[in-house]
Image 1 (tube, rainbow, N blue to C red):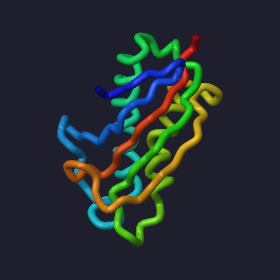
Image 2 (tube, rainbow, N blue to C red):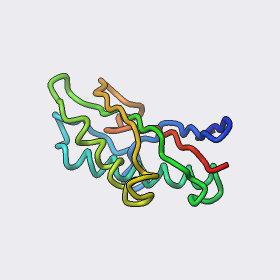
Image 3 (spheres, one colour):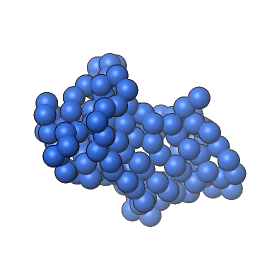
Image 4 (cartoon, helix red, strand yellow):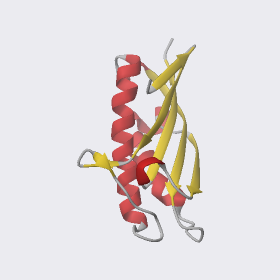
Amino acid sequence: MPFAQTGNLVFLSGHIAKKDGKPWVGQLGLTMATEEGKAAARAIAIDLLGTLQAACGDLERVARIVKVMSLVNSTPTYTEQHLVTNGCSELLGEVFGPTVGAHARSAFGVAQIPLGACVEIELIAELKA
């Protein structure tokens, strides 16, 4: 299941970056630059919105994007995970506005992500009662 709801909170499972319907494979700092990683994170945000829509029926029901957690497939010396994650955060801000779209977040560099994907992001949203 790509999401679970408890009370007014919806937890979306991690979504990996996809390009042309396939895993967007790469490692930041080795085979990918920050701007491409940011584009991958933006693509994930679009997929997350689709799952959130499925979870709540209507994005107008979203009271707040609470938390975004981003895993960036990166080399040990790569330190721009937060800039990659901006691709997701910026799109959420565009869609929901500065109040509803503002969220806490974490960005981690990891050694590998399933299927070799470059980025994986999960999200927590609060729904209106």
